[in-house]
Image (cartoon, rainbow, N blue to C red; front, side, top):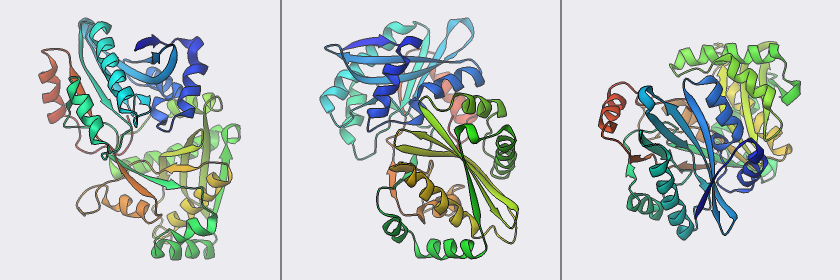
Length: 353
């Protein structure tokens, strides 16, 4: 299998393959790589394609982090993107990726990847292990997510919600909740600042890492070519209670960033009406799958994600547990980085990286 390194002229080829894939993910989009390169210290995006008889069979956006003295770390979030159901293809692609990394930089310390693959695909784990990848003890992206199918009618979709959720949606509607929707160019800087203020307030409340405002400005500027944006604003009686920024890639939507108020009169129920309005709007916009982005275990009430995971699952959907992170070690220095990961890196992350 031949590997092609993409440049800016190949952007459309890369994007078109991503859009058509069942395993597409926002973290493998060209725009996401640009964001990482511009707003995250010392990261650079490298895009490659896997060709078989000159036909593109897979893509990968590799994030390279430069270190002193020429060393580097490599990471593939939710990739590579390929037909993970075709095990022969997965074997060829994994082997080719390993060969590419072997030649890429002699001072590469490791390559870590988190494939967009469910834990049910045990054969994929074996293929990775047979090609020198070892299961890594810590992940960067959420270990699980909730996928909601938006193709049923609104009536049938509503029936899949937990009874409590349906009742609280009715209550929020009785209280007069309104949800404003802003598409791409309709999102003003003032609205973006309003979103960011509530997002920052929520981040401090739950102690999750925050992204700089300039990142969202850039995302807004670049929206429309491949990734489109929708900004939602929930209000009751003039009070702004929530903002949510949804990224849409083809027929799939990703709800990664949001912020909510803790207003004592409405905090117990307004989120249900807010999310229902969001789902209806996305459905009417042609979105088929809603990725609720991040789900924790429901059998551990002490887990820091238990509360919002319980909330998310009230909307039905299907839980998807990823196979986790795999590492290809390339340097004797790698054990040092594992120690750093064990000591410094937080056990739970509430946002993507």
